[in-house]
Length: 216
Ligand code: CTP
Picture: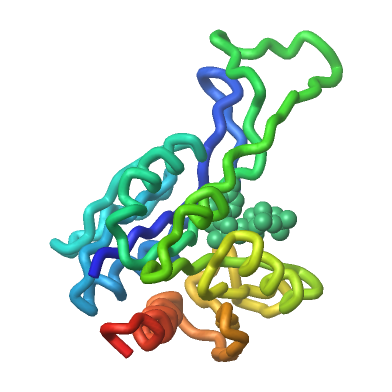
């Protein structure tokens, strides 16, 4: 079994010294890479900038990228031959329209950034998904969690969505724990307790393997 995982944030450069990014640590995606590798899968981990060391497991190949465009190019190269896709990255939604060649000087009292939408990696690859491939996405929500997650499931052609609610203490960004609800395209829902991210990763991997024909 081959697994593609995106993880961490993306950094979108403004000039040679600045970027737009977010607080994703990459921990959930790296934990998933370890959990899939422990089940015997060959994992390609495409990671945005994180402070985490490359996983040392022999079955995990890590590719480092910075921007959403680089993450897409790397993911698109692996996606056709992967059985499972896991989109755990917190991709920046927008990028600067132009990257300044030189450092932007503080000339005025205000500065307006012109941003354009980044490619949606999960949705774009989702359009190429074959029936035997299984795609997992993440949804981080603050309200109408289930409806928003179901909507994402459809829009991005996911087979499963891992829902984190920011209303749950200890879930989401900057925590070593997570509390997730798994929603599947066939209408099933499983609610899990707050756990360390490694244990959450094992729950997600078990749920995916149970739904893949040759593992079910
Ligand atoms: N995702 C992606 N590429 C993007 C944005 C998101 O691959 N440019 C993936 C994420 O890795 C995650 C899922 O899509 O698996 C959900 O991302 P999210 O940003 O929450 O969803 P959006 O559809 O952008 O909705 P919104 O930001 O409005 O909640």
